[in-house]
Image 1 (cartoon, one colour):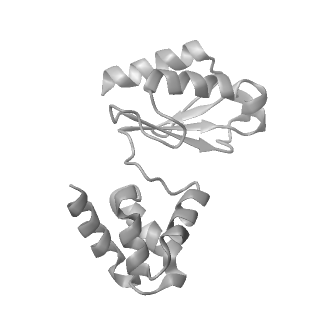
Image 2 (image 1 turned 90 degrees about the horizontal axis):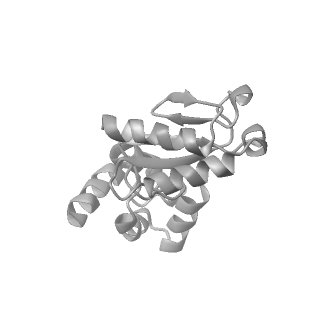
Length: 156
């Protein structure tokens, strides 16, 4: 499987080979093509782009938009902006993590959910807010979150 992923990465990077100044664009292309930037391909990306592996790791870990694990079937965006923070976003996030088994920025072991942090979903009056597969859910507490996750799990 890892060989197939590396081959796909090589194909996606072909326009950028040997162009270290285009590392971010190359990583975008990989993420668009695969849905993530595979950890097992980071050293090959560095080699193809003619940059040190540490540079690829720096870029991938610095920018939140890059993910190094495959996305889940359901994508959960957790607002961690001011209004949501003040109204209990951390409790909501903790409940999501407990219910799904995923960490912030990661994917659940069953592959059903990924959790991504966002700074604002534009629904501050409904804080705390999350978005699952593009659908906004607000005025949440840990119990409502558990029921919501259960509903998505059953619908999978």
